[in-house]
Amino acid sequence: MRSLCLRQPGLFEFQEDPEPQPPGDNEALVAVHAIGICGTDLSGYLGKMPFIQYPRLLGHELGVEVLQIGRDVSNVRVGDRCSIEPYSNCGSCGPCINGKPNCCEQLKVLGVHVNGGMTERLVVPAHKLHPSRQLTFPELALVETLAIGCHAVHRAQISDVENVLILGAGPIGLATLEFARLHSKDVTVVELSEDRRKFIAKHYPDVQVASLPPVGSSFSTVFDATGNAQSMSSSVSLAAFGGKIVFVGITTAPVILDDPLFHRRELTLLASRNALPTDFPYIIKLIESGQIRVEQWISQVENLEDAQEIFARISSGSLQAVKVVLMNSFLAGATTGFWGNKTKIDL
Ligand SMILES: [Zn+2]
Ligand SMILES: [Zn+2]
Image (cartoon, rainbow, N blue to C red; front, side, top):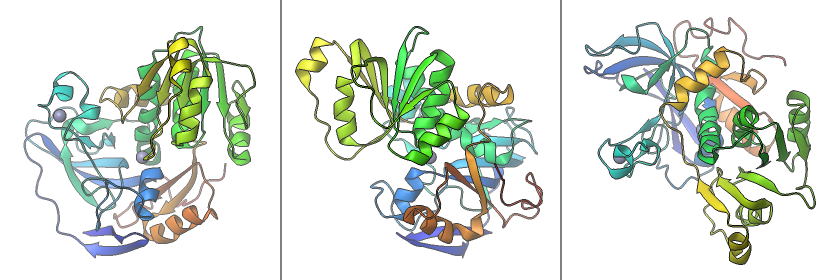
């Protein structure tokens, strides 16, 4: 079968890989139809992702179809369309035992620490599959991105009287926004890019959007989705007395904390990493019931064959999109699958 390998930073190459072994008793063989591109993939492409070693098959935001199941599998059936929870955890360390597999001490993410979904078929533990009868493959590929925001909002335990500030409106900030809106009617987003501010104004008219934090305002919960150390530092000055800060974005730089301010306001600082298994079926239900809408996010659907060009265009800034989803055109019937013969959607 054909895979697309990131041979080294900046260079994708097709390769012929052996078919995966038949699934074990608790595993499933799946066909990869849709692959979302996210910041992690771009950092890998640019050689800036410390956890990626080369060569690597990228792809952790996946919409897949079940082809074959092991003897003991009961949560999915052959033919099901699924989202994959792309984190593999050991099951025996402290966090795994305490219900936090998202920060397992041995955590491995598909397409980051191990080869991911830029291939035709994969064998995965069946419990990592979350099926939906209604969602399309590109929508299923977006569930993982949404899960990052979902988990961050659950970490904050927002009550409905709280006002919320989200710093940064890339895909992670937008994912946070989707779930913050379910809990609070008073949400403000601060984003430097004018295009992204316009996108929010158009699709989220109930949300206040600005290029700078409103002067003199403070917020009971502040989410930082910028991954920028300076922004993360200054989030302390934007949180209300007794408030919470959640770092959703990640930086490799040290973050300086103004401790007198942090103490005087008795703030709570939370990190949010990946997502929990329960987030996946919860999100799928929210999309199915229309409480969360993601079709406006999928600004571009392309072929995996064109990945080299697409990654180059995204990194040079010539392709501006909220989310690009690659369809696996190697698969027999994939291009005539869920999107018909359409490769682009006009929004
Ligand atoms: Zn991602
Ligand atoms: Zn573990």
